[in-house]
Image (cartoon, rainbow, N blue to C red; front, side, top):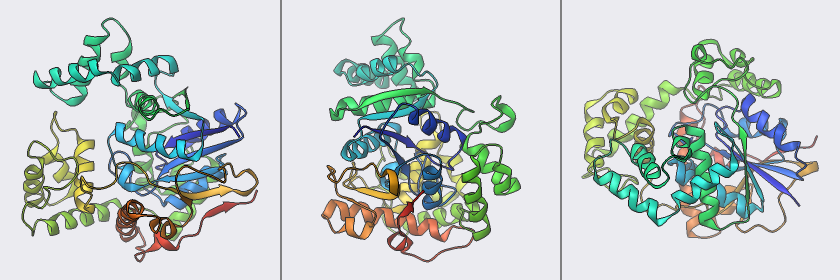
Length: 400
C-alpha cells in the first residue's frame, strides 16, 4: 500500500490545506494520512477550534485518516515538531511526506537538510553563537552561509515554511526512514500576514482567519475555507465550541501566577536556559495580561514564538523530563471505505487515549500531558466544557 502523509497545523483547516490534499490525491496514492496538532499549535497557541471538528474537516476534504500530534510535541520548535511528525508517519507506514514550501525545490531542501545534519554545521553554529549572533536564527543562517558560500541554501532558511520543510527533510535523514519528501508550492498569505497585506484573494493566514472570526463570526471565513469545512465551523460557533482567546489568556496567566507560590517555580520547565526561568517569573509577577507577559519576554534574542511556547509549557507543567518523541498513534478519524492504516504499526495505535495510556509508562506520561492541555482548552471554550472530554470523545468515522 502506497501511503502519502501531510503534516499540518489545522488552525483552522483552510483552502491551502485542501489544495495540498487535492494535489496529493492526483498522484495516485492508496491513502493520505494527515498529522494534525490537537490542542496546541507549533507556535504555542491553543487551536481556535476543536480537534474533532478540524479532523472531520480534513476527512471531508480528502484525507483518509487523521492522527494526532500530541500537544506536548506540537508545542515545540520547528526541529522538534518535525521529528515528532516524521516519527508518527514512519510508524504508520507512510512512504511519502508532502508539505508546502515557499521554494518547492525538493532537491535543494534536502541538500540544506544534509548541511544541517553535518558536524561541520554544528561547529560553525557554535562559533556564530559564541561570536554574539543577535539570535539563533541569524546564527543558523550565518553558519550555513559560511559552509556554502554563494549557494541558495542560506536564503531558504529566511522563510517559515522553507524552514519547516528543511526540518522535515532533516528528520527523515536523522531517523533513517524510507520516506520520500515532496515539496509543493505554498499557496496563500505569509504566516501572520493580515488580509490587507496579502495579494492572495482565495487564501489567508491562520492569524487572519482568527481575526476574521473575531470580527464577523464563522460566516466571515467563507471566502477562505472549503464549503464543507465552513458548515462545521458555523455549527461549532452556534454550539460555543471555539476558543475564547481572551479567556484563554487569563486562564494561562492564572496558572503561571499559581506556580509562583513555590520556590524556583519555572526551573524545571523544558526550554529554560540562560536564566529564562527568572525572566519568566519576573514577567508573571509584573504583568496583568498574556500579551503584556509576552511583550516583556520577547527580545531579538528570544523570539515571541519561543516565549509563547515557554509560557505555555510552564502553565501546563511540561518539563525537560517529558517524552521527546511520540510513543503511540492516536487516531482521531478515518474514512471507512479508504482506511489506509495497516493492521500492524510500529507504535501502538488506537482511537482511545485511555487504552494508549495503559501501554507503558511513557505512553501514560504522554497521555497525561495531552489531558492537561485538553482540560485547559475545554475550560476556555465560548461555552466551557467539563474535564475529561478527551477520554470520552468517539472516533470521527465517515462512511461516504
